[in-house]
Amino acid sequence: MKLGIIGFPSSGKTTIFNALTRGDAPTGQSMGGRFDVLTAVVDVPDPRVDKLSHMFNPKKTTYARITYTDIAGLQKGMGESGGMSGSLLNHLATLDGFVHVVRAFEDEMVPHPDGKVDPQRDLEALDTEFIINDLVVVERRLEKIRDGLRKGAAKDKAAAQAEQALFEQLYEALSNEQRLRDLDLDDEQLKGLRGYGLMTLRPMLVVINIGDSQEEIMLNYPHKQSGVVNLRGKLEMELSQLGDDEESLAIFMDEYGVTELSLDKVVRHTYDLMGLQSFFTVGEDEVRAWTIARNATAVDAAGTIHSDLAKGFIRAETIHYDELMALGSMAAARTAGKLRQEGKTYLVKDGDIINVKFNL
Image 1 (cartoon, rainbow, N blue to C red):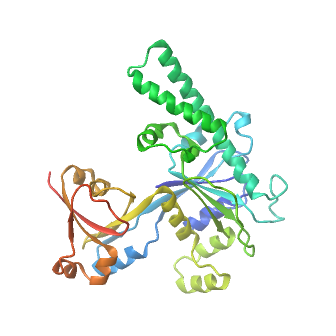
Image 2: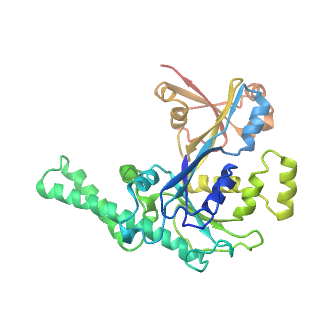
Image 3: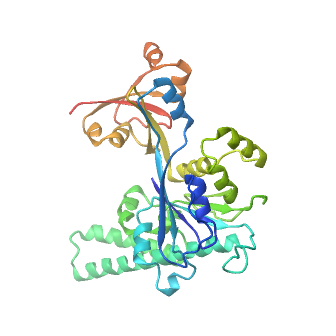
């Protein structure tokens, strides 16, 4: 999974990036609208992986991973001044979702570019830029479809007409300043839209970047596949840089009333927004966490591990993490007859431990 950390200059994007990745990238440096990217890959914290690793003592333990990119180059008024650059658009198109950092902290040393801190204004302003970008993309595609139908150039007229109807729906929504993720599009329609890089179709987690002693605030953002969380960015960055010093970390978290670190909180909300869950494979060689969509089947899980497992799928030997922990070992689970034999259509649950039986 690849998530882009976005926001206007002086919002604290890089501070949040550092908090999520234990990074030390310089903060407080505006790129002046120039496209630039910082990238880091982080393990998804999951205490279940830790306990499974302790149980199986494998040669290797592998956590699920998320790639975070800190993206500079977003400015107010981009849509009115020629739009986003090609390099910026190309990068944004590769992302699975966005973490939008909105400034709510006051700092005389870092003046807000607009002269006044107003998180609701900034949130809506960046959304407007994305709506304008999507409107341009949709309008261009719609013109091409109509032109093809008018000239009789469409190979499949019915398919072209269905696509035209879909893009007309998108155009109407965007013209009314509606985010595309608010539309009730089916899986087939969403699949057909993947290659267009539509920004307002992506899940969006809004991070309100508040000061160390500031109370949490609420913003109005009632959209599907969207969420809002408050983070004390500067404090969270300092906590993340304590590294593996768990004793000091616990002391500082207690002192500042932090109950959940930023990475844990952002990952949890992101998985919820994107409809994701984790399943595990275990053994002496490796204990590993895998990320998969909710309502995915056993054969989908097999394909996530390796395409050959899906092709030659026979069955999935399955037990839930909670049940395995209660029994104490895989041997005890087998003796108690608790390992289920599931077929291709079995719906994987978060925390399932799966061993795929296959034949090629």
